[in-house]
Image 1 (cartoon, rainbow, N blue to C red):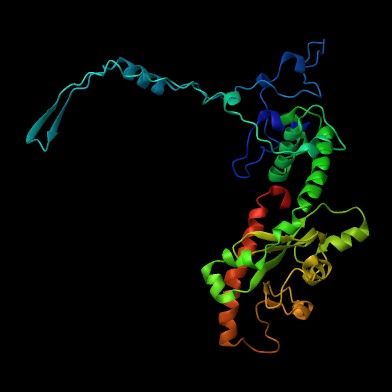
Image 2: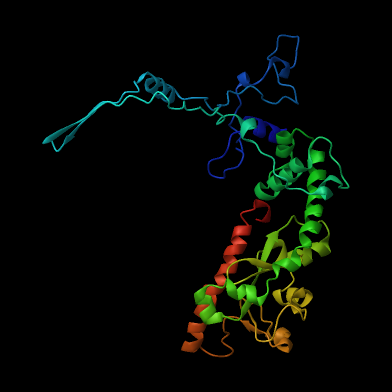
Length: 363
């Protein structure tokens, strides 16, 4: 019920850009409730709200059809004569008189376009974003079209909106929202998984779009790898808690390996594994070791945590990672220069991961 009040009030916290979270001293004025929201005590006592009452009377601002200033300007322009007479003074020395030129009588009148700036229905257009398979899902919701169901799911992924908020936005029950999201997440998984092979670009295509500086220093790079973790709800099962616990994030997570091409396009996404799994174990279980993924002489760029040179040695594929001290007190100057070059290129995969995490559900 508290969440319904927050959604109905529509107040947004300026710091978090989310729904306002009221404190103990915050109150809602009685003028925001209707008479039917109160109990009939019948004994002259102070009126009390019904348990299910939600504030509904608000004076939300609506966009004006036309501002007063725009209206005055339009009327003033309409009164002006079509004849134009002007006098131009050049540096207060020479006076130039411009004769008035009447409009030609055979000029065509200008047709005004209908004002649709504030008409939502007039500016709407329908884009065929779903195919026939979207109309034959296991769970069918007659209240929302497949397009709206997809839109609801995308809002959930992008904004991590709560189900009660989505239920009020789309005028359906919370259970319906939950079923729609579950259905479409599974549907999108199987649909997008078919594109997995298309993500893995050929070396010819990669070289055609490789940045010049990257081509000069690491021209044989096929993919840049890095792992990322997404926090999850703490599992109720003790064994699952242990497996998903991340010693790096200090919380329960799922870990995924992400790969991009040198020009920044996502080319590989592994399956999600429990947070306790190491980067090496993910690669050992992934399709990256398939014989058709790399050709001899190509290279992989990765963080020092992904020490997998021995795994790719049989394919004659080199793994570029920052150098390790290996008993040295400090790195050689050549190694320092090389490590800086690797770090300057490898950072692009971190930026791509950061961009993906603008979807709040991944944070």
